[in-house]
Image (cartoon, rainbow, N blue to C red; front, side, top):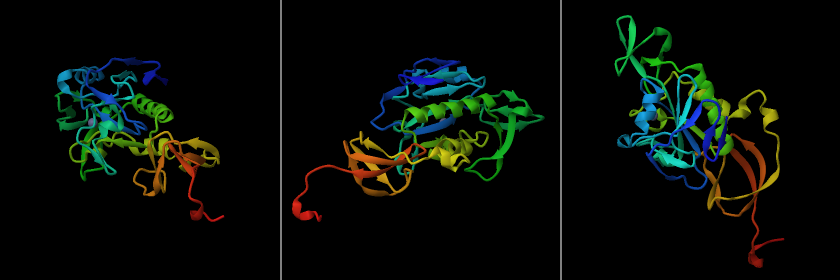
Amino acid sequence: MKIQNHVLKGNGTKFQESPNHGGKFSADLPDTIIIHYTAGSSANSAVKHLCDPRSKASAHLVVGRDGSVAQLVPFDTIAWHAGRSTYGGRVGFNKYAIGIEIDNAGTFKKSGAGFVAWFGTAYPEEEVIEAVHRNESSPAYWHKYTEKQINLVYDICSELIETYPISLILGHEEIAPGRKRDPGPAFPLDSLRDRLLHRDRSDEGALESPDIKKAGLVTASKLNIRSSPAFDAITVAPPLPKGALVNIIQERGGWYEVDVTTQGWVKKEYIRT
Ligand SMILES: [Zn+2]
């Protein structure tokens, strides 16, 4: 699987453009991936809904239970999946984030011996887990994701991290708590982002983060420079201007630690030699 021209290519992936999208992302974006569930009966019905202009909703990808993937919006273009949302001081995540919808019925009500989705379909017990949502205090019944879906979402996120400056993977439930419950506790969100964004915590950490020491040039018009590799970390200096030269010291989960050298003319009396 790989990304070519902002489209995912590989076995079982197809591109079917949705009319529901905004313009291109700004420079240095997207930097976030938002994980969703469809709360529907099939990937096909989700794709149909997200391609219907009346729905005014879309996502970049819909991941089916059999491991098929439909891409509805190219990765350089804003899709409409986040709605009202806030996190880390940012508001409205469509303009920052790639949206991945995973085919999953959502929650179930227990009915006799079975489990019934909101749209009326009954599901067998082996597809159900009882778990407490991160934003709630009592357990509910949730539709399990398939192993294919979980592995595929991991691989897709890994490709996206290679291609775009991704530093955050969040659930819809985290950017719209109270309003949204997806992807819910059946999806291993914490371990997914831990493995993908904090590789230095793994056993091979020492091997994966050697000192790299190479030069880099800032390509954004203003680049914040932070105390640690996270968006909520404080800035330690005024933003770096476009074209500033940096020495890259190390890399961690989509961030570089840099040492900054800038070239320019300064008045002699303000420099001590
Ligand atoms: Zn969602």
